[in-house]
Length: 338
Image (cartoon, rainbow, N blue to C red):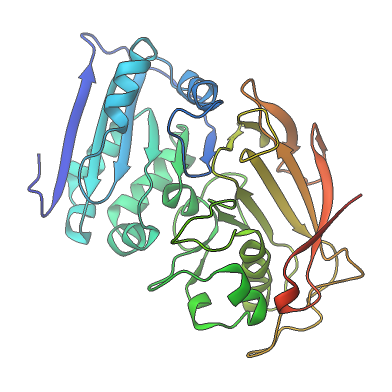
């Protein structure tokens, strides 16, 4: 075990005799507030089945949490072991003991927290290199929740200060809180190339005065602008109770509570037109006659619902196509079905 200033490793449970397994690749994206929500059990089983009898490792920063203990309590027969590894400095992210723990894993879960910490401590280190190796060469399944999901995207928003809210980015897509969108420079997850991820879309509380749907649209516009107006960019946004399971063929389905509240997943793609107004200090206008962004919405169910093909971003069923657009700042995000 490393010192609390370096890294911490905690083995929550372990079997007697480990039998080497061949894991099945896949990715589980989690909207950010699991907490025994309906659909979480089934999504967790989908994930664990891809490394049945294997070594389950939780990665995080900020010290050991409770996720591995939860897996041991509820899914002991599905795993050989469950452990947590907190990597809290660039020095520890380059430590061979740390990377050996990652190399030894059959399934990885990246916990929530602050994506700034993941970027600051892990990016450009042996930990990053090892993560990309086990994802793309060893081909083990990987999951992430909240900040852990954010960094699985090819593009991710990691503000150094207060995060931008929907009205701020729609009123000015060059608002200073939008400066830290990171592009293709961290984890390389299959089927998430050119994809921007965002979580907690429906969260509303005293610290989050607005939902994040408009923010997701604004961040997508900003990514396109910063990539020389290339339109081949995409977005995946999840409400807090949504669990998106992506299999080895790039087919996504959604687990959730089976209602119309809090379990929707959104798959965004541009619809052939750049924003009509994208200038510092001016509201974002991305209208295209009400058809700026094509979005497929799937409402999750406990048994898993929908079918969305991330290889072509068009083959889909079990959900609803809609357009997202904005006609200018304060009017906010608008939607229409088709």
